[in-house]
Image 1 (tube, one colour):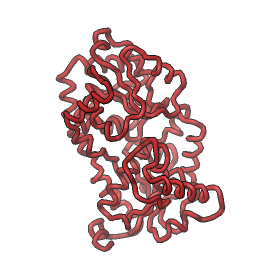
Image 2: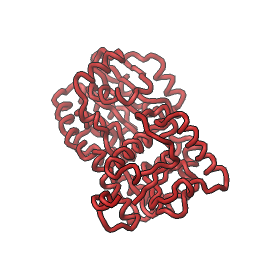
Image 3: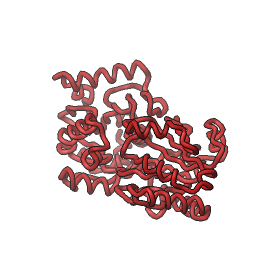
Length: 382
């Protein structure tokens, strides 16, 4: 069985989907081999994960994105040609015309373009609507990254639930293995001298940063004196007023911007609390990553976040500044509660291993392709 994966997000600036694709492809290839897991376009060898730049070499990126341009803007069937021989083509919203011969699959990450359209740009909404019409409604099989995301896809897009399999995303091994030395190195490198509350994510309206800032400012003076609020992540399409607040040197608030992937486990493991009051998540990588580090999490009682966090997080109404403030106060004043939630988080995070995600995904691909044997037999025949 040969699977061709649309890897265009790996060649451009991207966030959560890029994280998903990168680790997913790495682990699929470890199990099935590079010949069985091919990429469209054929960019070449993958380097380290970098959300700000392509993970491929300059020449491979230029040639690959050029072929995508031809595929999307001309009548040439470029994707059919480059995906030749594939049994399954796994699409993202970057390719407008998937190939005709292979079985078509895709991953549903979230439904925010429909459920929270005001938090997206017009371009994002258009791309997701085209993706739904050209891929999701035509696909032979779909992966949803949580049960909640599957339910939303069935309810909002009227997709056939029988075609959708829930396969949880994974957490990179570095978060499970973060050491005190890694924590200290990041603290020194970033000048973090006080205990801190951490937010990680692309700076965009859906992440609800204004509520988090308001909640932090509303903490008691003694807590703000003891704990900083550290905001890490690339600038997306955040409201300019939010960015102005983050850039205004509010007492106790540190804006780090994009933090390179190798530093994220140490930064996360060093936090007193991960605060993630997002309005909607299809999965919520920062929550799962913090749990893998054994860090107490405060997050939203909405969308997939209660499902992903289980009993290992303090859940609040993200639209209530008072609830976010009170939740932070409760965690910051109770080291025992933080320790208990951290231990529960480590247990919960074991569900989110990329090895398990890749193994289930290969079984999904085999089923969609019509194979009757499980992955072990497929690998032996490859």
